[in-house]
Structures are given as structure tokens and as C-alpha cells.
Length: 152
Image 1 (cartoon, rainbow, N blue to C red):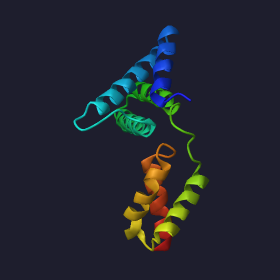
Image 2 (tube, rainbow, N blue to C red):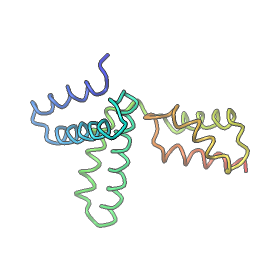
Image 3 (cartoon, rainbow, N blue to C red):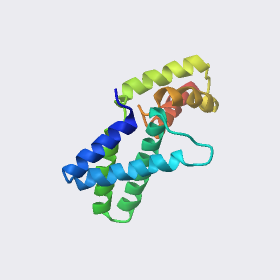
């Protein structure tokens, strides 16, 4: 199976051939962000996990932009950002449902032995690597907060 970077390259070529401007611009931006991460001092070529981290960061940036555009009354720009998110999400693994996320959080709380909201850091440290790319950090932290609040 091709690596994520190879898949992105192939999809970029297809988008350019089919003159799909949205996909072409998003994939070029993604390739640029990946390359930028790889040339940082002390960095090396990214594996699929590293690429997923970059994609997650770009999606988070887009979500923040959407909030700002909506607050500023720029629905047209918010729609453009949402379209970019949908292109980027094609490269993420299948996202967990709320129930699956809750089950993962419960398992992590039991594994860590968390007793109160003060243990959130330990639970997040346990969960984040397991759920990388499968759920957004914000969703994970909200689920952990909610379940720890029930304990404490």
C-alpha cells in the first residue's frame, strides 16, 4: 500500500489533470506544510503518523478561521474553509463516533487509574497517541473532561 505522501502526490496530479481548483490548491498547501515540517532543524522525512499530525494541524487552523470568519460576517470565506477541511479529511483515518470515543476514554481512565479532573493530563497523555488522526484533540479533551467531572 502506498504511503500517505505518495497518495497525496497521486491525488494532486489527478486534481491538476481534472482542473479541480479546490483540491489542487489544498493539496499543494498540504504538500508545502509537509515539506516545511521536514526541513525544520533536527527534523527528518515524515512517516504517515507525522503527515497525519500535519493534516490535523491544518484542519484545526481551518476550524479556527471558520469561527473568525463567521464572527466577522464572512460566510463566503467560512464556506471556502469548510470545503478545504472536507478535502483534508479524505486523508484521515475513519473518525471515531461519540460512543467509540467515550469507550476509549473510559478504558484510558481505568488504565491510568484517574480519580478526579486533576488527572486529566495523565489520561490525555495515554489517549492522544492511541487516537491520533481518529479524533480531534478538542473532542478528546471534552470527552475526558466530561467523564472525569462525573468522577470528581
